[in-house]
Length: 271
Image (cartoon, rainbow, N blue to C red):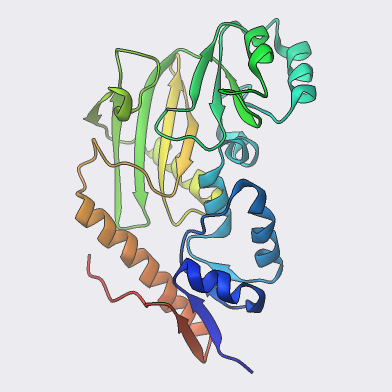
């Protein structure tokens, strides 16, 4: 019987992909292309383990999957449009309810894929062509009263800051927004923990919004993101991510033996 594999890099992942079996561990974010998500289904079916979890990885790579899987946490009328047929259905049901709407490109970040439209008719006219290729997320254009970035690194670090942009509706600091420290309420922290538990995130950046005082709602989530505006330094941030990874590996090593390390193992880290 061969030893259990622990895979640390993409080269070995590709090399040993067909050999991976129940109990093996992949310790990296796999750069799957959009049409390769089925490979994750195969790995899950084979009971291969991963850190970060496979679910958190695919959610981080797709706004539309977030909108579908984490729908219960999203603003009202958050919808996924995958083709003209689904858009026509939305058009019939919601055209009388929505005035302006926004769309989010499936794999864009930093607010670069968020577009404002004056009507669903405008969306329909451009849907399927640049800059609005399928699939995408569709939401009403809400008046956001508060936008909060939350960084949760396991039990080692939690912080939040409010993002404010007086120049356009996108609150991202990358697009000119400013940040100020924010103290999370117990309700907000509990909300975040329910989101990361549902998505199996070992660490996460969450964007929370309030709509005309109602909320919190989840706008987006990712395993990692920019920390401009945060108090934590890049060095401290990376140390904690490494510590979380090592913690997971240590627990995995207690369950499986013998082990073969494929790639350069991580060294111990102190936080």
